[in-house]
Image 1 (tube, rainbow, N blue to C red):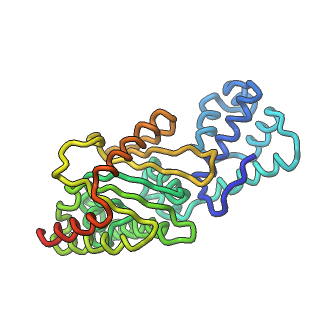
Image 2 (cartoon, helix red, strand yellow; image 1 turned 180 degrees about the vertical axis):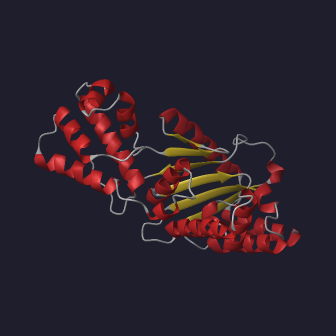
Image 3 (tube, rainbow, N blue to C red; image 1 turned 90 degrees about the vertical axis):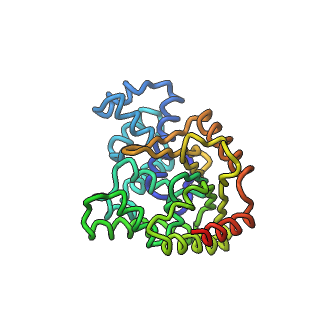
Length: 288
């Protein structure tokens, strides 16, 4: 059984637990239909459990372990302990009224990742935004929202940024399209403050920022923004996150991960070096 890393978030733990249950089921040659019947559920319920998309009932997991032939007390205890920790609410639980379900999963994965690579086209990545820039972005996208709701959404974004400063801070590598940096969101002063913030963030050893310049022309990521998350547990696959207008895609199949990873490598190869990034950020700030 997998030994989990200290401090892993509940979202990653659910995925890890689901992966372990799937492997146990497949090793015994048991179908999802038969497993679902045992726990008074359905094939689709087993599928959701194995994908880590639902919470787990201890009774259901205990029954599945018996079906899968896991009888040794230590092995059962390790998995049932994982059930308890995977069902704990994340820090973002108090913001669930603001977060769509498809984005709650991303916040949990972001917290558990050891490396995050992202390509952004329209905005500065959320983890790198200043409070003023974040407020401008959120206000523009939440037409009609009350000031109190706007303030809470900004608080949520700033709370997410703490992941870059904690003891388990991930490596964060961002490639930002020059268009996002030249769009004066919130006005000239807000944008200049944001650009200066990016320059200061470059001093953090776990943060790398590159810019995809206009003068390069077409490139490998013309399809739009995406993120690649990697986790400390070797049994957790890399996950590709692609956000859409009212939903998101979470991709973890090997061929999908390989395709996006190749695109990211190409982007990094043709974007600015860290030194060039600082130069272009200063140049854009002067030209605003």
